Length: 155
Ligand SMILES: [Zn+2]
Image 1 (cartoon, rainbow, N blue to C red):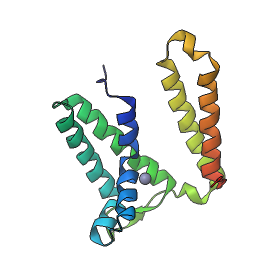
Image 2: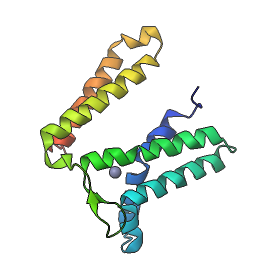
Image 3: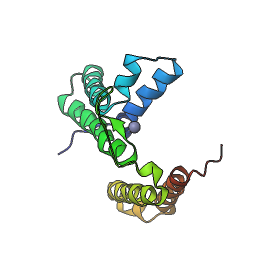
């Protein structure tokens, strides 16, 4: 049985490495710290920090902290599929760089969206699974994915 961790916390963990990079960029941080956190090693460092932070803030919930860290580590295969990133600062670059191939990027990411949606939908009570908001959320996620994959941005 998986530990009970709030969905919002899992979403933050999943985006944790990108959130750290965004905060560093907004703060104008440059140099070694920036290059560390843009590498694959940086994703693992952020995952460890997220697990420790969750453990401290949630009354030493070790299983929850492991789940949060694992979710953050799963950011790495996604980054390696979508981008090419250095394994460590100035290290060799690795990744499929699907962002350079929008149709392939959309196919892979839409599949991930659908699998995630199916898993989430199973957690809903039986009456909620067939209601229109469940299907509308899938449609919205796929439209957003198409926008990101093909560069259709309303802003
Ligand atoms: Zn990322």
